Image (spheres, rainbow, N blue to C red):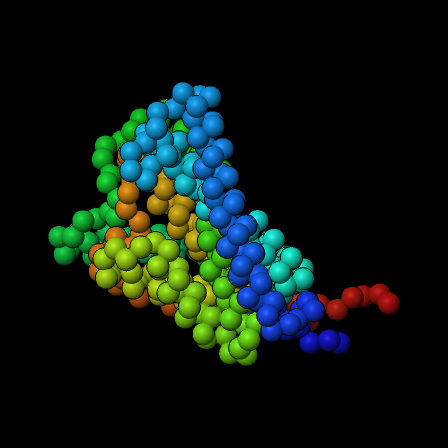
Length: 303
């Protein structure tokens, strides 16, 4: 039986040449730029047709729900950009970005969501509790009063439809392509894991030291889990659940469309992440070990 390469070495599943990761990076830059610009152009066209008012500053639309939809959709464009770059630039199956099986393992993803739900609730509770105890701002964004059911449902619909794609897009880029890009040359996964955390944090801006360090920890932990479990499922599950909770709260209390990011969080967010993220990583790795151990013991009954 041919041994399966570890996740971070998936670049070697195709006709590997040392220069292919470089070519893949150029293609990713090109495809990413085109897709991101194209999505914004489409958004402006929809705005002209529907009469949506233009936003100020970095906002495409003045309406926060519509602007959030644009933000989420543009970040989701990392998925096709990464898949195209890998398929054309490295000439390997695009699904190897998802996992060592060459696809998303949906049963494993569902199990990771069940682990992520209590982890995110605990993370949020600790963040709020520490913020209140230290007289820090409880939220990272500008939250106000209850928006009413029509406004909340409109925002919730956008969030539920697009947030999973946005979170997956960031994971395909930072925990998928970037980790495997380093693995195209290096046998150790650690340079890719550490770079994933740093790049993930930089993509959110510098913000405050606490928020910046929290994102590094978040990204590096998710990257370690990706390598450890052989796929993006654990990272996607945690990212999707976390963003869904945060954005649904934002939709309920007027926090959509804000200028801030997770990097603007203060030190309570960092402390909460330090306390929760290792536990999520341990439980997920243990669950993966249990699942794979059971599957290897199941033998076919017939010839």
